[in-house]
View 1 (cartoon, rainbow, N blue to C red):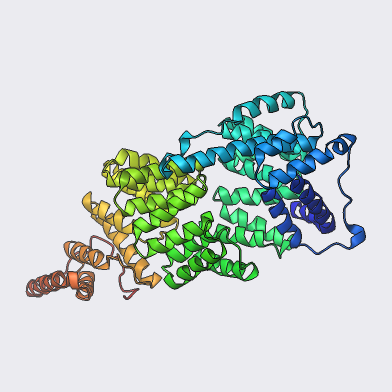
View 2: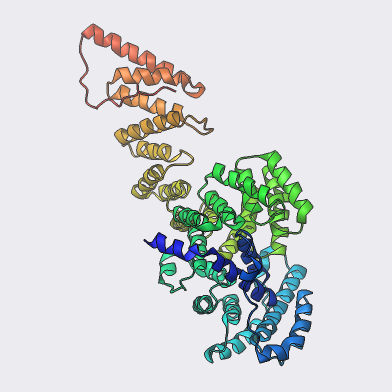
Length: 565
């Protein structure tokens, strides 16, 4: 029924198209370029309207007429990034539109000065110290107007941004929610809200306007909160409601598949996206991460060259080139490009995390820790940064710290086996064996990406002299390795066979022991032990035949005959 009502809501795509055209012109007048782009991409995916269906232009008040010339002049300066000059000519204006542009120009002027100062003075690892000096004044003026109820949807959005920049996050959330109610079609306010919501409970607690755009927001939120199954369902229903041509949705689905490491699906979608929109740069850093994971050097090289031709001073381009050098093991060069990305945008999450990885490769742990911490400052939900911090403290042999960071990573990715294996290792180092066993078993249960969990669990049982449990784990491990059919570099089948051979031998199960010993002979590192065990078995058998006794089975045999390497 809910789906039905949603489809009714989306049923009138003509209405949606009209709303998009209206909001595009509203945002354009106010210089909100990213919201214009988002709405335009969405409008482009819908069928064009006939001339008589086009929406009328926005209502024009007496105040708008008064401010028309000043606004036209100021907007021309604003478009040329002369923000102080724009603000100067808007000082006495009375209309809502002029007031927004006046405040927004002052805000952007402060941001521009902050960025210029940052680039001039500091290395990329000391970003936090420079402040936008205009923020406090803007907050005072906007909060007075807010109390008097004089802010429209756009100025509420700006007030929220100012509060967020001043780290007043709780107040910012309330103001952004108010902004979405005042002007539901302004995507910028929804996006700001996305960055402030930390978990699903917080999302459920917000009272948001019931409008078609909310579905886009919820889908985006699910992706951010790693609820990928729900996100994909949401995007699928949006496609079915009539947005099948939207490149925005295709890119979001590709990012979602990247987040659950479904690499083939993600690569296919990114390739489709590049066919539809060959000069697109956004999300290409995510595409390069996938090519990196698959070690696709020629493709990554082609992508890097292609983006350099389009725009070499874009954050995404720098990240792609960084990945390219990292894949070629030129870590200093890679770090240099990630630094360049951060000079262009200090809030670029991916670049901080990737730079942390490069510093790890260069064995520079203190710089890696700093980089990962910056990533977390930008987005507390970045599990890769928490996981990276865990790894750096592991190198520094500080298991209590590791435990803290791996736990954080695990909370963000409860079904990611890598986090669970790392947690298990930390518990093991702290001799918390029961917890370690739980983590390893859970890692195996959720689908062990690297197929290490059972091996570690078996070795832990072996260490604790729990031989039956160890044998059981080694059996499942061997079956797992053979059934998956992949050649794994770190597969330790010989270790498992060696242990099982000895285990069966001790338990007088000579048939199984002999089978394991024969299998051991297939592996270089276990060949000698396999032969020695076969000799021992034949000696025991000769001895048994001489005394003609049958061994008593104490342990149920673990059937090894069902699989073959």
